[in-house]
Amino acid sequence: MKNFMDENFMLNSKSAERLYHEYAKDMPIIDYHNHLPPHEIAGNVNFKNLTQIWLYGDHYKWRAMRANGIDEKLTTGKASDYEKFEKWAETVPYTLRNPLYHWTHMELQRYFGINDLLNPSSAKAIFDKTESMLQQPDFSVHSLLIRMKVDTLCTTDDPVDDLKYHKQVAGQNPGFKALPTWRPDKAMNADNAKAYNEYLDKLSEVADIDINSVDALIKALQKRHDFFHETGCRISDHGIEEIYADDFTKTEIDNIFSKVRGGNEPDGLELRKFKSFMLLEGAKMDHARGWAQQLHYGALRNNNTRMFEKLGPDTGFDSIGTFDVAKSMSKFLNTLEMEDKLPKTIIYNLNPSDNEVIATMLGNFNKGPVAGKIQFGSGWWFLDQKIGMIEQMNSLSSLGLISKFVGMLTDSRSFLSFPRHEYFRRIMCNLFGDDMENGEIPKDFDLVGKIVQDISYNNAKEYFKF
Image (cartoon, rainbow, N blue to C red; front, top):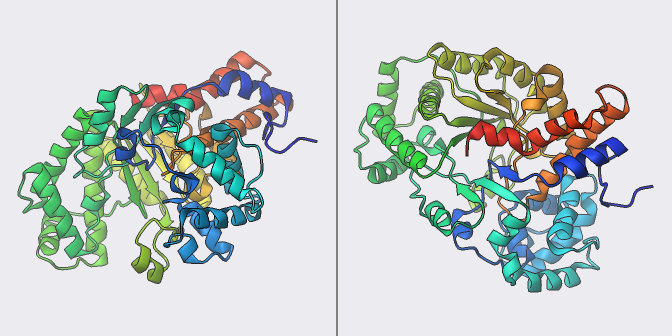
């Protein structure tokens, strides 16, 4: 019988143990998609307590606390930091079989050396011990990242951002790279004319271009895209419900833009045409610069209107959506390929029913000299857990080349989230280890160990060219 979360946690065979401990464990980390605040990286901040580094902004935990019957004032409200932590500790025992249970205790172990289970009885001691430790230089943001062997991390940034904090980090030379990611969603989302025009006014100011036409909009975005490239950006990211690929004419797009710029709301078809146009234009910019584009699709966001109006987006009221995307995904990729302007692309689905769709779509557009040019992104958001990761890797293994997979990312807002890479690596090593033990792949550790190391780090290093 195994002990909970010992050194061979999630490793169910000798082959899996060897793959993890000898090949995967000590590989550096490239975290190519997260939501870490750049100003906190540049400031090399120390967080006051576990609530601030753990619970501020973590909608995963908030959802669990709400499900456990915790009042909102003790989740996102004005309760004290300790009161909120106490309610999280009360919730943790009820998260068994949820990845939050594993992540919580991995983070306590890896960063603080705490092997006690978090529950109401241990809450005060753990809070006090970690509060003291977090004030020490060894627990500053830079120290936390270096401890986890972070080589490169990529934040998520709007085209209007000045990227001053990324420049500061580069000047500090802290032992890792903190690079921006181009996230132009607000430039595409013309759903609300008033909000969209307010955004375009900001973009117009930072780009020093009067955005009075679609052509001017693209010119302004191109100028900012160039600026991002000069600041080290090599990836774009799009958070979209669907892969938009509706037919349009340039005249239609001009008219839709003029309508919205004039303060009028577009109808549903006009909005889809506009988003289809913008998605293609963004991909062409990425291709010209040799960037990789990331497409995160399938989330049904802000389902709870009352709470959205109270707390805003990204507060834990999103869920998995159902969208018929195969034809539009094919059309989008094929349109770019026909013009020889298809960039490296990573596609993330939120609905696991799309696993095989994506895994087979890759093969339609992969081509040399880039290995794995079109990637099936790792289990994202609600799929960022053991079953989700296994199903994603099994689909990719069966229908493509998992050996060329660029691996894991945190997609997190917390500086304590990097053990998720370890979590992924243990699950991956267990998959390969089981196959070795079952005689389904050779018990050749040079062969399999190299693939494990490639997925852990080397493939991403080669793919992104950081």
